[in-house]
Length: 226
Image 1 (cartoon, one colour):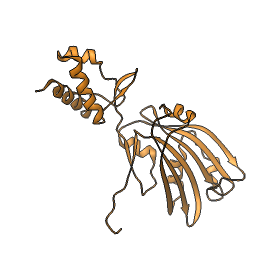
Image 2 (cartoon, helix red, strand yellow):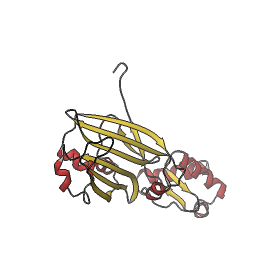
Image 3 (cartoon, rainbow, N blue to C red):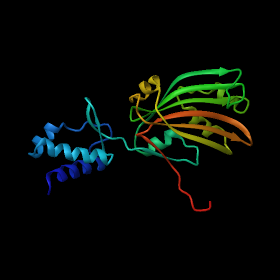
């Protein structure tokens, strides 16, 4: 078997079998070349093919790591990020950054509104930023909810039904502060999702979520004429 192909297939098999987990560091080119008894150029070719296939991530000056598979979400539903991340076998986390009551509300959410800001994590790494307004006139219990232990989206899905939702999706570059929170460069591609949900014609919540572009996909499947 071609040496580069052998290296590629053995590393891919280890990743798919779970022997190498997302975020694990891949041995250096020098170590792999010594292990396989081949030239570094052969190893570099194999790693390049694995990176192109999305199985590994090569970070300049940091090394090579097993890639985190992207989380897929149906674009025509309101997802629970905690469930989506857990379904990929990754540990989910949420950190509350700020919360306050807006007496005058926001442009897309009636007053009074509760503002909640935080970060979602997958496998210990930043996954998405969230800035959300909740209409307290529609969801008064949100004012006393503990959003330090549970993300507001998860809490809302468990406490109040929604009847209508609108998504606006954009490809954006993050601000310097957003890039720092997500752990990406300021030129990294990110996915911005603005979503408003209603119940019986009344706004429940408006949220802006900013996802790392390499970690999240929005997927829709539909029939012709639907």
